Amino acid sequence: MLMTAVNQPLSLQAIADPQPGPGQVRIRLHATGVCGTDIHVWRGELPVPLPIVLGHEPAGTVDAVGPGVGSLRRGDRVGVAWFQGGCGRCAYCQKKKYKFCASPKTWISNGGGYAEYMVAEADGCTLVPDKIAWDIAAPLFCGGFSAMSAYKIAKPQPGERVAVIGIGGLGHIALQIAKSMGHEVVAITNTPGKAQDARDMGADEVLVVKNHVGKELQAMGGADVILSFSPAMKQNSEAMEGLRPGGRLVTTAPSAEPIQADPVQMLFKQTAILGSAHNDTGDLVDILNLVAAGKVKPKLEIYKFDEINSVLARLTEGRVRYRAVLVHDA
Ligand SMILES: [Zn+2]
Ligand SMILES: [Zn+2]
Image (cartoon, rainbow, N blue to C red; front, top):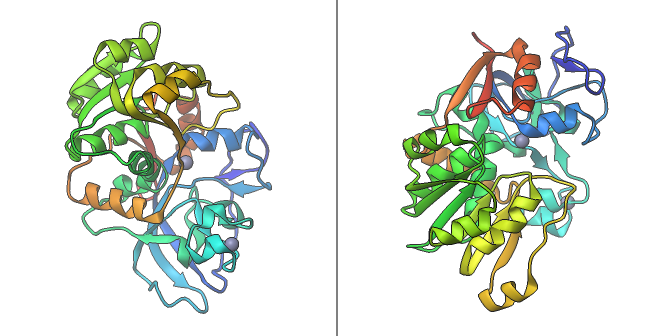
């Protein structure tokens, strides 16, 4: 399903099977999750060279191995995250922190997963535990990874109360991560229809925001950690008022809006704002393991892979519950 122009439907086209170069593998895809960032790319807000195959939550079987690859073999079950490598020589690459490299290798250089085959850097692949089905595995490679990174960057301590703003593709995973780690969890949503789902996924309390998320959260006792997946930065700014002393707000959504914070509140309450995306690859491994252990259960809508255009529309309208996944073998 090729993207040939901004804001135009992706089209089913026959293209040559990609061949893995040095350090790369080719993957026969089984499932690919559909991420909100695909919408940004599709609208041209995150420019990419066209034509391109989108889809940065791919999972499948290694079917060909390029020269110099020692780590992966044909038949391995893998998924691929956004960042697949870097220049290999800078200080950040030495630490395997490819996202800080000035020349990172991403799916944008290799192509994504809305296809039968893709190539990826072997270094950018992560093994999928046998216990995880393809459709469950795929959305962990961006959504699940982001949710785990958001949780871990806040360094939650035993007994801390964790609030999650935005019960969607990432938030519904973050909620379950926090619950599985033993925290009291408050789910925060603007959508009354999601309240029962949030309870079913383990939320101890649900706040359906009426007017001011921070004041309403504070009235419920506040939170030590707020993991926000809301793209509304006004709401994130207001959420700062819901932090307990020493509290941390983690913001994850790309937005052109600024976040505002009251510096007097920040210094007296010693609060902090942290940004998070895909942090360390270990976070991806952690969410794969939690899901393999049955502690976190992604709630998915499953589609055939050529249904991507209607899925993008559904995602734009905010109707997906809670992550859409395209399967290639149906
Ligand atoms: Zn994504
Ligand atoms: Zn580098």
